[in-house]
Length: 188
Image (cartoon, rainbow, N blue to C red; front, side):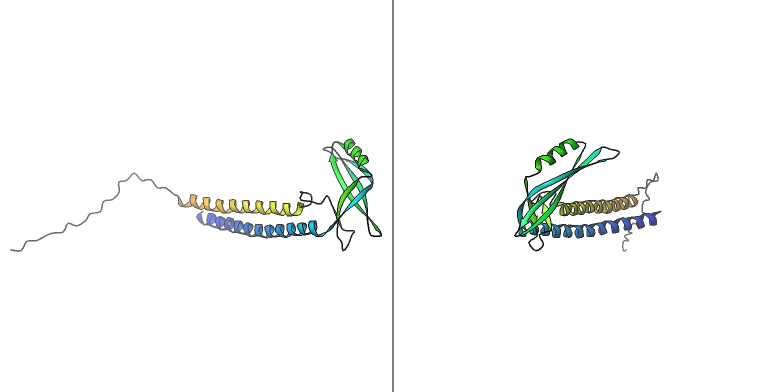
């Protein structure tokens, strides 16, 4: 039975180490994604886009009514006009979303666009969870893998401690060693 648990402990320890290494990879990817998003936020140009129109769509599912509103945003760079789309989602309160859709037509929103290719845009730019979603997702994944790896290694150590902590009780008195007594002889 001990050989099975030793093999299981080695497997748990190896899994924990692999999870630690994968978490480092996810953390590095999160850092790269964060730096890229920060670069985009500061290097790309901003422009005000006007909400030209919007459509609301409703979908029924088993849990609740879900609805979404698609906005069309128009912006002009130089002599060229471009169109971006934005989608807002809501659940259960579709009437409010439709009212907000009607109220937003004709208003402006900030659009972040790539100066090299103005058709590539980001809506709602800034230091928020929507803009930095991918880095935050990778960071959460990294923390989860570190936690799982820690518990895998700790489980292996705890299991090993259980195997080595056998207690033996005996009712017999311990054996006493008989030591020879040195004999001193007198000379006559």
